[in-house]
Image (cartoon, rainbow, N blue to C red; front, side, top):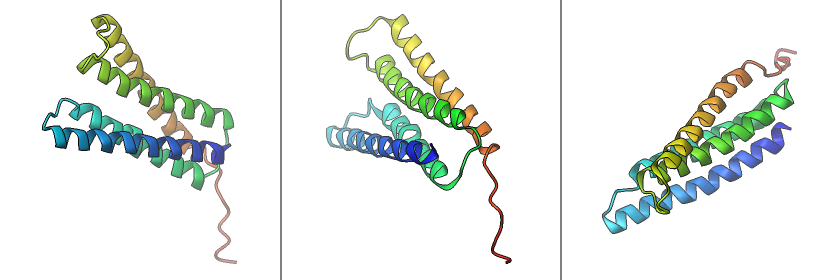
Length: 135
C-alpha cells in the first residue's frame, strides 16, 4: 500500500512543482505578483510536502494501511482545497460569493491540517526493521 501511495504522491508533487514554477515564471515575466501566496503554497504544500510524504512511504512500512489511505486522501484533498481556495479567495476569477470562497479556503486548509496531524501519527506507526548489520 505504501508503494502505491508513494508514487501517487510523488507524481502529484511533480504536477504541483510544474504549476508552481509556471506561476513563478508568469509573475516574473508579467511583473505582477498577485499570485505570490498561491505560488508559495503550491510549492510548499503541493510540491515539497507531497514529495516528502511520498519518499517517506517509499522508505517505511506502516502498520496501519487504512491510516496510510486516509492520510493520502486528506493530503490530496487538503492541498487542492487550500491552493484552490486561496486562489478563489484572493483572485476570485469566477466571481464566486465571498461566503463560498471563504468556506472553500477554510475547509481546504483544515483538511490539510488534519493530513499533517495524521502524518504525525503515521510516523509513530512504522514497522521497525531488525538491524542485521552487526551479524
